[in-house]
Amino acid sequence: MIRKRRGRPKARGRHKLPSLRSYRDFRLLWTGSAMSVMAERCSGMAFTLLVLWHTGSESAAGLVGFAGLLPALLVQLPAGVLVDRLNRRRVMMTCVVVRMVAVATVAVSLLGDTVWVWHIAVVAFVQSSMTVFYQLSERAMVRNVVPSRQLGAAMATNEARSRGVNFVGHPASGAMFGLSAWVPFSTSVALYLASLVTLVRLRGERQPPRPRRTGRRMRSEVAAGLNWVWGRAYFRTALLIISVSNLVFQGLILTVAVVIREDGGAAGTIGLIMAAGGMGGLCGALSGGWLNRRLAMRQIMIVAHTAWAVVMPTAVFFRQAPALGVLFYITSFIGATVTVSGMSYQVRITPNDMQGRVGSVVMLLVSGASSLGALGTGYLLEAIGSRHTLAALSAVMAVLALVAAVVFSRAGAAQEDRADSIEPLDAAHAPSEPAALPAPDVPAPASVVDGTPADPLTHEARRTDG
Image (cartoon, rainbow, N blue to C red):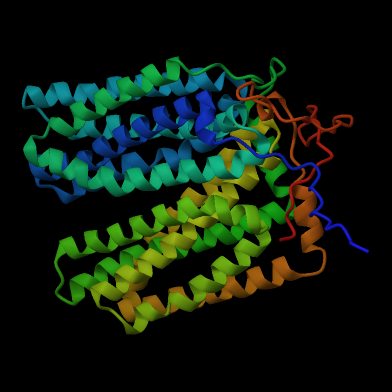
């Protein structure tokens, strides 16, 4: 008797997803944002160089740098509220126009061979403020241009874009400044203009934020975003751990610069070490989507912090530039994968009409930690020296790895991960091009903490238990 070979049963519910390049709006969003980020990098570094070369004042350069960082702390929360109230595509276009005009005033003043520190500081503040609005709007727009099951791949592609621009933008800005002071600013204006043309061709949001009740105060909407984040223990814990790890890495960057100077290294050596970190971040972002599809966020958190805790102490014993370059490559590679996972997770679980507020809370915690890390490490270096500072930073990372292992491997963590990964459904999750995937049945909508109806939830949860 001859038995028929049974073929492997076909998996149900699986669909081969098209390439991200096949989505016209995603291509336009990605391209326009790439040019916008490159424009900011060209002018951002040139601000510091311009002040140093024309005034010779380090304090003036510090003032301009502070003006560029201040919006990350002051503007985040109100920007999140406004992004949830307004049409996000129009917000992005407005940000590009304002930044283009502001930077153009610097190029014009340089053609007249005139430099005012207050003018440069104001332009740096305006550009950075508009960047906050732009980043929050762009992240929210991603849900409008790709299906939900490709959010991870889209976020990985966007992160790779930003890492790649960072790797190229800063050296390019320095090289252009060497040709003439006005070149990086005029190049920035041209890039902003090209970005605007691209965004004009982008279709509007398929599901814009719901209109807010008139008379509602901004403070209550900011509180709603804070309460939404604080009310999700799993997400809140992951965010706090990531914020502390960002604090550690900002301290590591400053400490390594001090180590190179103490050992008689050249300033260019620090740039090469940072470039190694940039390359690691780019490679990590490119692989972040692959890892995000195979591991749950809780597993990525455990693996990443454990790996950081293992490699960071090497800086205490190996202070040579090649060893530090390898260290930065590894840490940045891991950091990019964590960023992709975290952004994908946040965008997926957040209702569409709260994307701006929740994103602003996330960015505020991350930016605040970075600022505190740089400030605190400076005092620590003066008090105990570079070697002991590296040891202290390594000890903090070891504690974070232990906390992540305990929190995300405890009983019930997998269930919390699955519960938070049930994603809000809206029209943005089914782009009209290419053909949308079959939609599952949809239950009745729930409600969120601010009293507005939440987006309905799908029955189909993303696989998160690894």
